[in-house]
Image 1 (tube, rainbow, N blue to C red):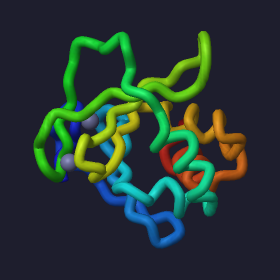
Image 2 (cartoon, rainbow, N blue to C red; image 1 turned 90 degrees about the vertical axis):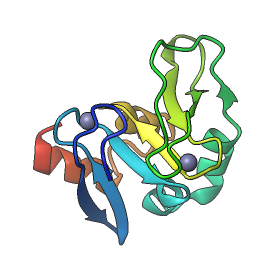
Image 3 (spheres, protein in one colour; image 1 turned 30 degrees about the vertical axis):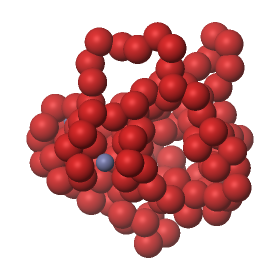
Image 4 (tube, rainbow, N blue to C red; image 1 turned 120 degrees about the vertical axis):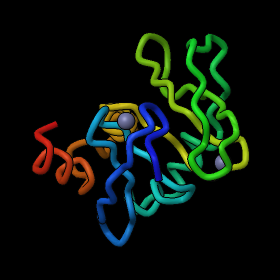
Length: 128
Ligand SMILES: [Zn+2]
Ligand SMILES: [Zn+2]
């Protein structure tokens, strides 16, 4: 799979039997639908936070394409007020794209930032 952002081939990291596509170039992460819930062991919370997230009213200039269906993704906003995080979501629910640091921010928002294995792995492996 190539990076959504810079089109470089991504590497696959395995955490809890979940395959995470990670771009060494830009630090972006692709998660298939449902993988975030498995990573957190808390699908309900993910449903609540991500699946109910509203499309971002203020869109950024760049549109990312889903690496699976190659269609333009939606930008959704997570969080509230000044701490909004914008992530890209495939309209057909193939998954989500997190720019560098965004997965951590989303996990922090869900109170899983420090404890999440994926955060530890990224920290240990890439010093993030
Ligand atoms: Zn990249
Ligand atoms: Zn898709």
